[in-house]
Image (cartoon, rainbow, N blue to C red; front, side):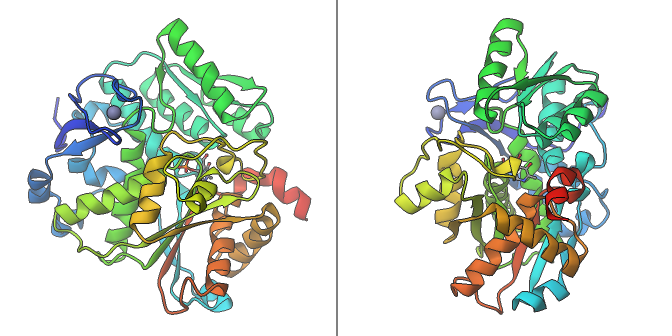
Length: 395
Ligand SMILES: Cc1ncc(COP(=O)(O)O)c(C=O)c1O
Ligand SMILES: [Zn+2]
């Protein structure tokens, strides 16, 4: 069977730097319990991953195979993930006084959110390395994505979601063949249940940043952005942050691209937006600390942002600070309002998390933190179509 062009060399702890051979199933660093990051032979990758070669590659995230971990063609689980459109939202930009406003529409991914990117890679790699059953705690979208890729591989998937997760997400997981358990609590409580299942049954845990490859899938958002903007990154990226793999992944992608000579040293200012009902990263950013404490009583209509504690907190905060970015909150009412503004002025019907990025942009323009002539990319991380339960309230 054919090999991919992957140049994966090893895994490295994002905290203590300890290195690990990449050819077996691993979760966290065995020394310090923090996330592992994949490292590549970027000099070799750069020989074939050129701007010229990319023009002829397939329209999916697998176009970046040199800097993805999967080694064998047979293990690439494909449902058309990635290579989502980047829209120059001209009418929206004019309406809010920021003509260079772009929307990266991740709602067009398989299972209608950007979670497809991370789970495509995590499940492909787990399948390649011999995992037999997979488990995930999820706010909803990640569970749907896991269910889909597990179905492609033919692996059992065990998904744990808060019991108030909208029924559509439960239905989608079940129809995709997953075993669904609803938990009385939040995503971190679901994580406890997953750990019990792992201990009892030997499942492989694909929680955010608790295995090394979801972030590799998410980083392709950074590669695509650079490629779609003709290798000139925007001034600002605004990203709705829960567990943070998107932020961490894109920041990693920019570093890799610079080392391969695909981009220069310029970096976007990375903005994290959270709900004022659950904002552990914003609080830690404002306090100037490296780790975020558990947010008590988390409440928001944006389920993907209802993440009271994140194991990759220090990596998210590092990306925000190193980039000269900022972290801010918006209210749930603003998300509902700006969903309609985005929809009616751009044609993109966002998830509430995506609408949060527009609310954040409006605040940052008002504060003068973003100048009207700067280029800004908003990440619409999911499709509004999955949130009928919310829009019913704003009819
Ligand atoms: C639509 C949506 N946006 C954003 C997020 C947060 O993403 P991350 O955990 O990568 O920070 C989620 C997570 O569930 C989500 O479903
Ligand atoms: Zn470590």
